[in-house]
Image (cartoon, rainbow, N blue to C red; front, side, top):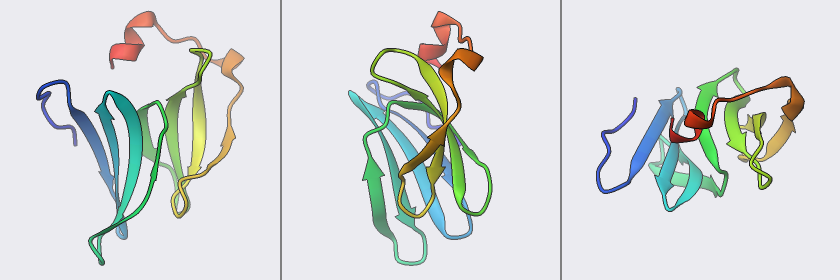
Length: 101
């Protein structure tokens, strides 16, 4: 689900049986995990992330923008938020408009 824009703040969330994952875009981009049973933040990572998909029990897929401006598809660990792997950037070509979602 995606919230409406309010003063430049946008969020996109994915809810699984255990957690809520939220992309926050307010100046800096951030990915946050919240444990639903405890109602507490599990972790938060400073990723320039645009899209997020619930891939399997342990993995999220995210479209990440690297420091050089290249976009990659990153495999993120649901428990820790760590980037486990990414697909080589030369396999993808994104339109310039993509940065605005």
